[in-house]
Amino acid sequence: MDKLVIDIETKNTFQDVGGYQNLTNLQISFVGVYSYKQGAYLSFFEHELDRLKSLLQNTGLIIGFSINRFDLPILNKHLNINLNVIENLDILDEIETKLGHRVGLDWLSQTNLKIGKSAHGLDAIKFYKEGRLEDLKNYCLQDVKITKDLYELCLKQGHLMVPTNYGAEIAKVEFNWHNKMPIMQTLF
Image (tube, rainbow, N blue to C red; front, side):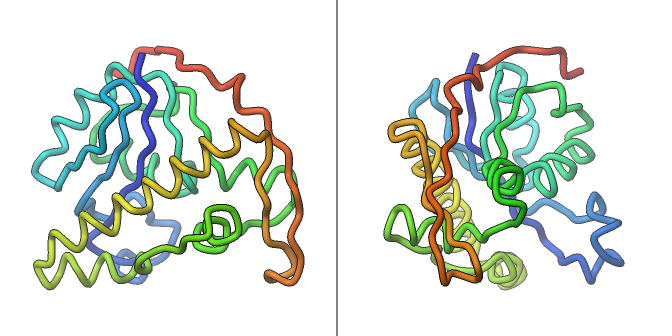
């Protein structure tokens, strides 16, 4: 079974679809993936989603940042599968469970990895609309790399340093993600 780090970008905003409650009406422009089985970063533009669907058939663990609130519901609708049957590790959910609040990926990566994001999610929509597909791809895959690096750092050291109080304080938050093992369920 493979384990994947995943991030998606969309063509449009919540405002375009009438708010967060219509999340699944967002249209996918790009999906970035890191496959542990292949040891490679993979790219899927909107016309390549069938290839992604095939990859997901052999996946036992999906790792991401805010995937339960964003990526997975959108993918479920557009790929017409149920990714909820695959074990997942949503780093943002894990932090919120421990601390009671959320934190941005940029702050988390700067605190732990000493690198920040290259752009903002709204920039990805702009890249798509302007036909800057290479910029879109690079932005998304950088988020995948950051998420992968945070996951691996936490596996190695057993914790992440998490900004709290709007970045005024840093909390050492322990996690045991070794128990998140790939399992396979029927998707289709």
